[in-house]
Amino acid sequence: MRAYELMKETFLRKNYVRIEHISWLAIYGLLFLIPFPAEVWKWGLFLFIWSGCVLPILLSAGIFGDDIASGRICVLVTKPFWLAELYIYRLMGLSLQAFLHLVLAGCIIFILYSATRRGSIDNLGLWILSSWLVFNTWAALSTSLSVVLRREYNSLLLFVGIGFVYFLMGMLMTFYRDHAAADVFIGFLRYACPPVELLFKLADGKYSLIKSVACVIHSLALTALYGIVGVIILSKREFKFRPD
Amino acid sequence: MSDNVVIIEDLVKYFDGRCVLDGINLKVPRGYIYGLLGRNGSGKTTIIRILLGLEPPTRGRTFLLDAESTNLSAKVHGRIGYVAEGHNLIQNYKVSRLIKLCKDLSRQWNDEFFNHLIETFRLPMDRRVRQLSIGMRAQLNLSLAMAIDPELLILDDPTLGLDTVARRQFLELAIDIIQQQGRTILFCSHILSDVERIADRIGILAGGKLVVDCPLEELKKRVRKLRVIFPESAPANLYMTEIINQQNQGREMIITVANWNQQKQTVLETFKPSSCTEIPMSLEDIFIECTKPSTVPVTDE
Image 1 (cartoon, each protein chain N blue to C red):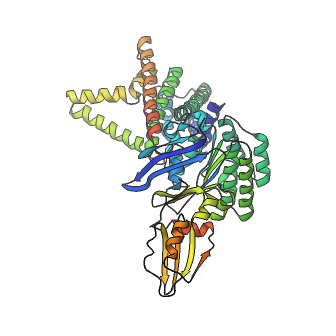
Image 2: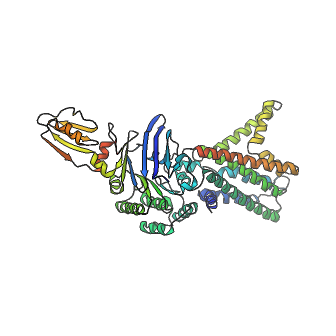
């Protein structure tokens, strides 16, 4: 019951969370108005980027930072549960939201695709799984960042950070393609950062079964790692606050 | 199980190189109402936050219900009711939803008592927390803290923003709680008359130190303010220890002395004063005297 309440609190904590879910789902419906040919538009890929990568960053905005800054954290941490529970149930709350959101989005896409035949829904099930896995890693990273950053800066930092990293990666691939340091950096991005590329390949059906399973385990392990870091930071954090 | 519900040992806290708490030692026995007083920024809220494990001490140790504050278990948290300064509840929630959240997150919940409080305070269940007045928020916060039947209730300026009637209701409620066996209350307040009305024991923080820590009645006995008239001009120095404040004006001297006793009276009589009358002091007067920079400790040890 306590776990469920905390997970529900993650959904109810801000009005914009509901607005984001509804508007995100509405976008899928609206995009079906455009007559995309099957070879140009993959609904799975769009789902992966739109709901798997962008949505978690927005949903987790200020998830702890806002609580700490406003002093609401004092209401929560003085309740009878461990700080780790607070973190885990918040993250599980986000993950559960993502699961329901992706299932709903999958249903919308499937129904509208059946009616209009616009775009392509190849491997939609795998895309949904990959989107959920990548959502979890982004959400865990963002939630951990929100413990140390003020208010909603965790989302802002991730947006700026992702832009910068991809710009850097593009530069490295262009100018230092054969350089060993570039390989190390790209390897770090591939395996230590949210596994966008690996999960993209998984969903696109480019991996064998064993590789796919390894990719899923890697993604879950990264989520757990980001989560553990977040729990450790949360347990060391001083909860100074300014009233709302 | 210790007789002291709250124990603070040699607590030191620095903020940005500034010493806020300087070697605080404090014990709150089970079943007491302890009123912690101090001026703004004297470190009252910091003590409470360190006690609850919301921030670490620079040095020293603190215990709540026999558990060290830096490692309070979920079980111990479940036995403590806490009303935070500023009543930082979840602002965008409706009152009814916040109550449900707190109820579901708590290990125990006294529905009968909580409903009685809600009826007493007439709290609107369908309004959002941010739409409530400060007083209503305080009442809601207090009701939520009390509903878990806490062994220890920690209140950080709980009556701030309450009107006279609500404050009186709160104080009566606090006394009701204490009458239930084994309940203890630690509270800070700026409203000295409230503290005077309900506290068994008083602590006053000044300059980072706990300058007063004794039962209220004893405090009133120990701190004396005297108007002394001398035959000629008042002496500049009485050669007496523990003078909190001294003002000379011609033949008249007004002194406030801590730990007043027979020995000090004898010292005063050697100056052969024409008259010596005691000026009655309220807790507010004592507080003002005790929070002056050169205050000497008034403790029962």
